[in-house]
Every structure is written in structure tokens, then in C-alpha cells.
Amino acid sequence: MSDVSIGRHRGKAARRHPVLRGFGYTILTLTLAIGLFSVYTYRHLNENLTNVDLREQLGDDRPAGTPKGDGQPINVLVMGSDTRDGEGNDAVGGAQNVGQRSDTTILMHVSGDRSFAYGVSIPRDAMVERPTCYDEDLNEIPGGFGMWNKAFDLGGPACTIRQVEQLTGIRVDHWVVVDFNGFKGMVDALDGVEVCIPEDVNDTVGNIYLEAGTRTVSGDEALDYVRVRHGIGLRENGDIGRMKRQQAFVASMANKVMSKGMLAHPKQLLDFLDAATKSLTLDHELDSIIKIADLGAQFQEIGLSEIQFITVPWRTYQPDKNRVEWVPEEAEELWQLIREDRPLSRRLSAEAITADTEPGTRPTEEESQAAGPDQPSAPETSQQADDPESILPDPNEKARESGLC
Image (cartoon, rainbow, N blue to C red; front, side, top):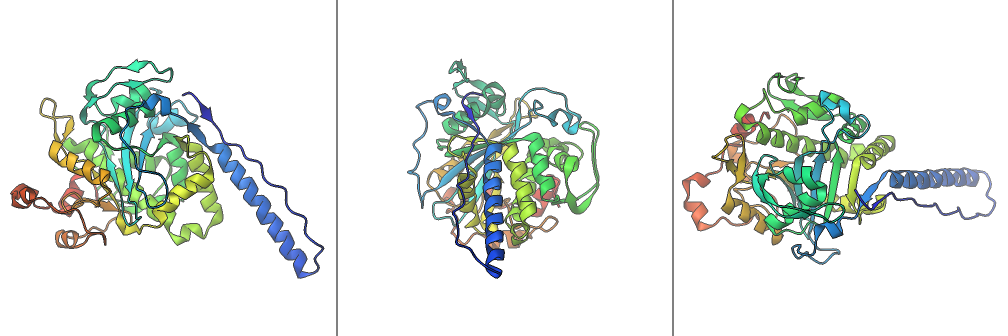
């Protein structure tokens, strides 16, 4: 990709201090040591970053965005890259080197008042009308009708961002691409992430075996968990079920990262940040660890119970039962909520996974319908209220369909 820049920062020279004695020498020594460590850490993490300026590739026909600053909503597009080009990626899951693909797309919306946030997963198999996009040399990549993840395959993150913006009318403020192998490094730096697998998995297609139970997974097993599509949940719901498990995994990961226990272990936190910064490609504005920390702080203000993960409303694509399509009216309702910076409706959040949900514990149907964010949900329309099909589904049944406990 073009215009890649890696941040490099110089530390400031330490100020000279007057001569101190006894205890004062100890304090001075500790202060200098911590200061030098902080400078080294800051420079090291910044040097890990890869930033790309896509503004020219995104064109001048983007949706209008909100003014930047405090009190404004933020939309962050997260894309998972299955590239096998990087060191170690060709060995992940035994896959062959097939170039870059994206099987994961999550649009995160953070409310302007920082009272709620939700991530919307978009199925890779969703059939959509892809808009025209542009390559690194600004040559046109013709649009067309096809699977959602074709955009990333053809034009990388720029094409996917244009696809999101043109089909939803939502301006993407920041974007992040997470490298496949780097994801494993982040999980390992956390000493694993807890998941709940309802039954033994024997996926002969992907050569993945997972043992049932609530436990901590790391390394290749963690990658297998977020990649498995067969032999778990409903087989005909492979990609959708995988997205729900990815949501649960990210929620569990966010819980661990944002917990006080994580912040109390500087080495573990540093290892995680080191792995994360090595595995991320970010937009041109997130070009320092300080700016990334500022973005992360926006989530820190929101309670874990108010961070939700859902999937865009979908249905089977009739010409090909192995594909899906968005439900037009419900999907537009969701995009409008984001554009207007409003919380999810009760119906849209019925199957949501929250960052405070412990693996293996799920609310009953009554608890799910009674609970909700402190911020009132968007009201249901009269048509939805009168429609028997709009009755909220049993969250436990939906969880089992997706291979969750």
C-alpha cells in the first residue's frame, strides 16, 4: 500500500536536578529509571505502528461526518485480514498463501455522550452491490454485485471503507486492519481468553478439533476457535455462527483488557500493546500510541455492560442458500440509529453480546427482555409492535444455534 509511515519519536533529555542525599537519591534514581523506561516504551510502540493515508482512494463523495472533538460520536471500522504474506501467517491453521482476504468486518459506534457503544458485524457472505473504488494508483476498480468480502480482496481496506460508507450513509472516522497472526500474539500476551464451547468440535473440513467446556484458549487454539465454521452450532449457519463466536471472543477479550487486573500487571500490558501495535494497520490520524490510547479511553468511559455486539439483520439469499443478504428495512433502521447517534432498539439488541457477559453464562429470555442499557433504547415502530414476527427470540436458543453456551 502507498504512503506507509512508521512513527519515530525522540525522547526529551532529562532535566538536571540538585544534589540530593539519602532517601532523595533513591527517589531520583527511581524517577529517572521510570522516565527512561517510559521514553523507551513510547518510542518502541510508536515504531511498531503502520499507518496508511487512504484519503485520496476514498474519494470526495463520502457521507458527511460529525465535527471532531469532545462530545461527538465516533465510528471505527475494524477489518480482520487473513493475509498469509507476513511472517508466520502462512503457517496459521495450515492454510496456504493466498494473498489478503477479510473474513471479519465490524463497525463500532461510540456514542457522543460516551454512555453506550455497539459493534455491528457484517457477514462476509452477504450479497451486496459494491460501489466503484480505487487502487493505490487511483485507478478505478469497477463496482458490481457480489459477496461483501470481495471488496477487500479487490481493493483492500479503502474499497471496504467505501463499500460501508456508500451502502450505509455512515462516515467512517477511523479504521483498523488486524493482522491474522498478530491477533494470536495479542491473545497470548493476555495469557489467553476464556470461551465456552458447548460440545466437542471435530471440523474435518478445516482440520479443527476443540474440546467442550468453559476454559481459556490461546495460540493456535484461539485462532481455531474464531475461524471454525463446521461441526459447531447449526451447520447451515456456518458464517453467521462464526461471527457470533467472534463477537463473544472479542467481548471476552475486551473484558480482560479493560479489567483492573490487567492494568495492575505492567509487563503483561506492555506485552499486549507490543503485540497489538505490531499487528495493526491504522488510518493516518492514529499515528502515535498516545492517539490510540486517547481513542481507547473513549471506550473506558463506557461500562462493559453498555458495549454490545450484534450482527446486521440478515436473511438467506434465495438464489444461493449458502449466501445471505441484508433485510432492507431492518438494516436501514440500524444504519439510521448510528447516523443519528441513538442506542439500539430492544429488538435489535435482543441477541446482543455484551462485554461483561461471562463465557458460559447467558440470561434467560425474561432477563434479556427486562435488561437494557441505562440509555433508553430506540422506540419500536407501531408496525413492529403489531407484527408477530417481531417477538423477541429466546437468546439461549439463538446462542445454541451459533455454537455458544
